[in-house]
Length: 432
Image 1 (cartoon, rainbow, N blue to C red):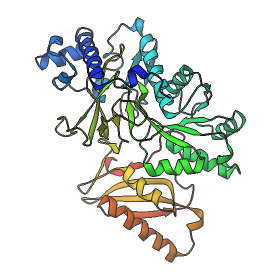
Image 2: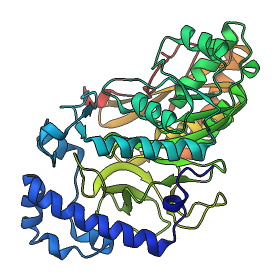
Image 3: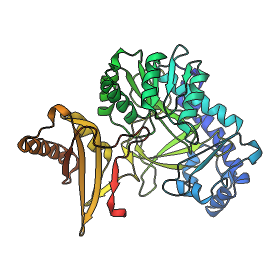
Image 4: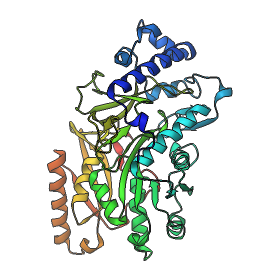
């Protein structure tokens, strides 16, 4: 189902025209209403009249998460506080939280792009959607909630956590769509089996998962354990929240709502644009947001873009699944390592569970990487010889992908702490 066909299926020329008109208007607004951007543009010798089309994006300055923190809490808002009807914020675990404001129109835009997203995923007004993303300052819960209501679906606003209640409502309410993080979806499936419930006996048919990177291997594990189609949804609060992009039923890239969010791919080191089709850091410019419009916001997510029309009929550009984040990247003895690479290997091995932990340390001048891996109960043995053989098998598989030596520590099932939100995959002791 296509929720908004005129906007999702327009020609590239039409999209270019709309993006250009909206960008020119947005640049004028922020130049006059946001001192931070006016100073940035003046420093580059730019005035609003210098931006004639979306092709001129490259002239404009970048924005980073640190810029939002430096202007905490409301310094980047482009409208008076009297026009702000909602505020969201990040957790602030790595510094001051990033604060995002919404006007009434922004909330409408938010629900519109999520409605497009979950429609692309296959949800309709006949579905019961259980929203197990967190509500509150996190954008996930309310974002999916408003989008689901907009398409006329029945919403179960249970929020995150409370696994026993989640399972009870999946059974009692007959929820057909589950929205949560992919790691929590696997955790729910595991908890059902432990409770003697067959996940495949539920009416659940579709999952809309995001808020953390996940691999194709994890998708297969989720789809197999819950007997559903698992769809990837992408978003970040700074841009709007969930609904920036989402896969359609063909699961071949995430359609970006590019009439609202103009994407670029840049080299994270040189900050220069990268040739179409190549992987780099994803950058967004919001061209319709009123409260917190952002110029060339560096997401730190690594991906590539595909401008070819999709089988579903949409012509919007698609982003491939993110391979990781440029700032989450581990450098181990000069080698770039992403947790998603480790996950891909582990999920291909039948003996291991989809739960792992990367522990980075430094011994003298040498970085070390230990990977704690949960082993399926049927393969966990008291015989040292068998465990040693399994450890060597995993070590070889991981090292062949990463290109760096690792230490494998096998742990029993349910040893690694579970998450009801974003999974914690890395402990970097070098920073302590």
